Amino acid sequence: MKYALSFFTVLILVISGMLFFQYQVYSDKFETREDHFTYTQEIEITYRNDSLDIRHHFKNLPNQVIDIQWPKLAVNPDCFIEAENTCKRLSEDKTKFEIGENHSQSLSYIIPLNNGIKSNQLLKDIFVSLKLGEVSYSTVHISTEKDVKGQWITGLPEVGQQTLSLVNYSMFGGKGPVSELYYNANNLIQQDPIDNVSIYSKKPLTKDFTTKLKELNFLNENHIVLVEGENVSKLQGKRILFLKDFTTNVLYRQVILSQVKAQFKFNESPIWLYETVASFLAGTTIGGEKSTEIVNTLTHQMTDTQLANWLQRLNDLKGKEISTKILDEALSEVFGIHTNYLSMNESTNEVFPFLFNDNREILVNSHLQKDINVIFKDGQILYSADALLKHLGYEASNGENGYYVHSKERNFRFPENHGFYVYNERRYNTVSNPIVRVAGINYIEETWLQKLFTVEIMKKDDSITIKTTTTQQ
Image (tube, rainbow, N blue to C red):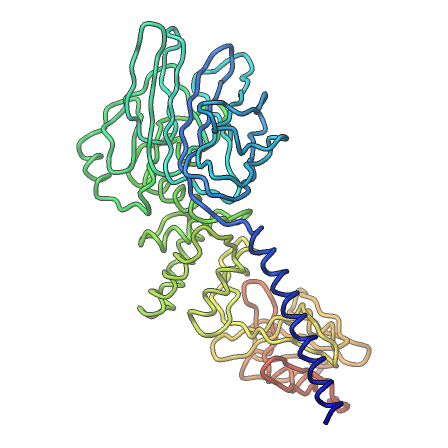
């Protein structure tokens, strides 16, 4: 009993020590953990000596370490002493704001412009941003010498402009961030804003165009600017879009796509994926033939409940990374069965048909094989033939008269849609096709796989095992 009590006491001490250590580690991580936050900003821009002199004020900053992301073009990065404490949190190397109670900090920097500002020029990524921070509201002031004429556009609503004795002044303000600046020496006509859209065009808009534009439904309240024509770099901004064709359909498509790009992190996704997401969120098809067919196919596959679930999942992904794989996972949860529909469409130029997939592991003769796909089509279970037959010891290829499969002792030919196959130069009639082509890929039907290639198929919850039997026909 004495030994048992001693052992129990030691055990309690060990467990207590482990719990204390884990708590300390967790506490340290919690205390240094960086959180996402929102802030407001005010940017003062003065154009002079062929450069943009910028004073950037950050407000409502949290009491945590904040990494500063300087523009690549910025020179002379420094603090700007607007008040006594507006540089107090800036680190010595000017890469971050340290922890502190001062919620407003200011920076200054210069963006040099080779040979000065050019008409019809779009400047991108010229402002400081804060890592993990989201801008809730921006105010921008632009001042130039009096002889610098023209328009400045930021993507934010224009609050006003004024010509003073020595300078020209413009002010902009609105929800969200600002990341680009556009200058046009030849004034375009600034149309009356429509909801959250400002338009600069060469000619006045017709009443019919304005009426149709007011009837359109946009995805968010962030202001956006449409400019007729192109800029010299032929690039698009995030909140400044350039359109050659000023029709309502083209305008609506560009605005919706721009809003979707701003709401999701698409990375290197194909354009049809942008269009597909935009179409579902806007409730109308937007884009080319491929995205239109994909949207129509998915819509017809879903019940009303599934469609509502799908739209909710898309909205839940806003602000997060998005890809065909991630969206396939969401679709699989909506349907309750796995699909690689969007991923397969990313790997082909044509539209891959909508199919469900069996995503269990495939083992061939006890070896895990990751290059075999199993799909369900028209009530059939199909295995990707090229890879599977190779793992079974055969060579397979498409030929002039069908699909050829051969080994040292066994040779097959499967003509496409001819109701027979040839085995070792002998013809056998069929009532169904052993080999089925789907989007240019050869698949073998499960029953025919077992019959012709004498394999045994065993299925578990997480795996499908394909094993060659000793008997061969």
